[in-house]
Image (cartoon, rainbow, N blue to C red; front, side, top):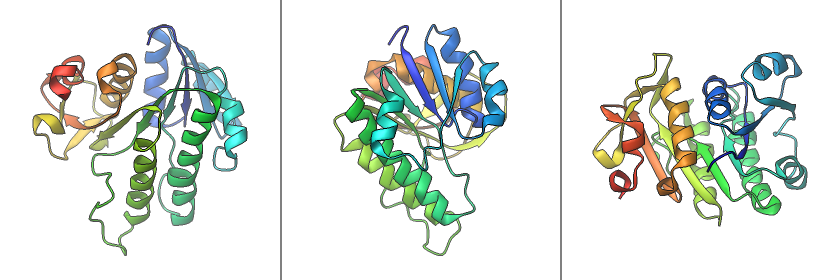
Length: 222
């Protein structure tokens, strides 16, 4: 996907702030959706166009209007944990509305930044503080995989602030949950956007020895 119009939801997140300049440098026209107007300048400094909108409060029709004219949506938003009700509201409900909105607005390509262990049978005990997030992400990912969108679900392991290596290992290559730098996650999102082999795939990954482009190639994902 070259010279595309890409909208990133959650544009002030740590991964998104690393992704935005990569998208701009790759020649894309980038819009970053942020909730706090105070983050406009920091987001604009990446070369992306900031748009203030609270996706937690927008319905499908309003999100579809926001998405109109885009070529791809990247969901990199999250409630940040702590409040179970808000976790469900953002990580599950708003995310699902955004998928329905993408379909309504005619945006085919949709990339979800999830996490390595996201699945319906996630195994997190109900009383655990991580349970609402695990439930919310599992529901959102399952909904996305059932849509007619050209979707990709990216499941990185525990996120670090380590420097980028440009190399990962995927579950297809035998990787189990470990850790990966946010900078490498951003690079994976960019590569996935450009790589048709990632469409209709859930890609779980952590730091590894395989160049990102090779790890996301048709041969390695087969």
